[in-house]
Image 1 (cartoon, rainbow, N blue to C red):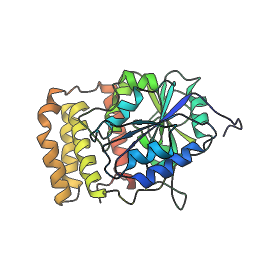
Image 2 (spheres, rainbow, N blue to C red):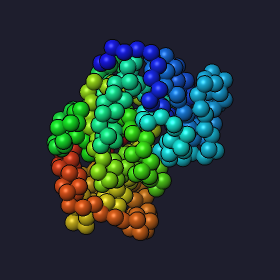
Image 3 (tube, rainbow, N blue to C red):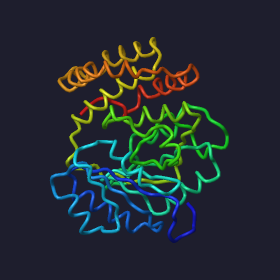
Amino acid sequence: MTTRTGPDDRTTVVVITHNRREELLRTLGLLRRLPERPPVIVTDNASTDGTAEAVARDFPETTLLRPGRNLGAIGRNLAVQRVRTPYVAFCDDDTWWAPGSLRRAADLLDPRPGLAAVTARILVEPGGTEDPVVPELRDSPLTGPDWLPGPALGSFLAAATVLRTEAFRAAGGFHPGMWLGGEEELLACDLQRQGWWLAYAAELTVHHHASRLRDSTTRRVLGLRNTLWFTWLRRPLVPALRRTGHLIRTVPRDAASARAFAHATAGLPWVLRQRDPVPPDLERRIATLERARRDSPARRYVG
């Protein structure tokens, strides 16, 4: 990690939140104490627990956006419209960046104009253990140019990634149809289609203290639905059929999975209208990742 200290004006932190006032206030307090002193933009997705009022009172230096409805991940797009720095670090209301990591991420991105994003190592609090997804990032099967700062990735985790602002905007940000839940996969695919690279950087650290208010079943429904929508938006016909069949055979046979498939089916008209399969080289990368993820403990549709 770099030994330089003091403010760094290259990165803005963007946080989306919904009805997690206490966790958000903790995160904002930790971000305020970072040596980089990054500007912070919070999109409050129509919280009803006094979140916006508490942020305005306790963190007046924070830019607070109140769209008046729950935009999900699209709240990040709204915030990025206000970003004036070359890089944007996404952060959830139950995650926070370690001191020095934002500076180091900018140091990695500065000399690599073809690199769109760097994803950090995630430590689960309060124990400080590695998140189950970390080995998947560290051992990514994808290849990339030797100038990458770490393993090439095919996707990223929004709560633990610093992105190049111009790349995010050029790719259109998060797709409004996805709303929330695995929404990164489609954006990552479109970034790669435009020629950008994504990488894992183990020297960066994000802490995650999972919210007590997290609804894991709803998140599973949304994640499975969005996996199916991504599959039919970007995968060629045969891989899309194969992937759908695999999910039908392997996801838990319960009410949550049934809801996910029902929602995915209901959305098929807009998905098929916007369908735009990737070229063969990118499909090979997606298929390689799919095979590697099948045994990952971080990719099980449970909860």
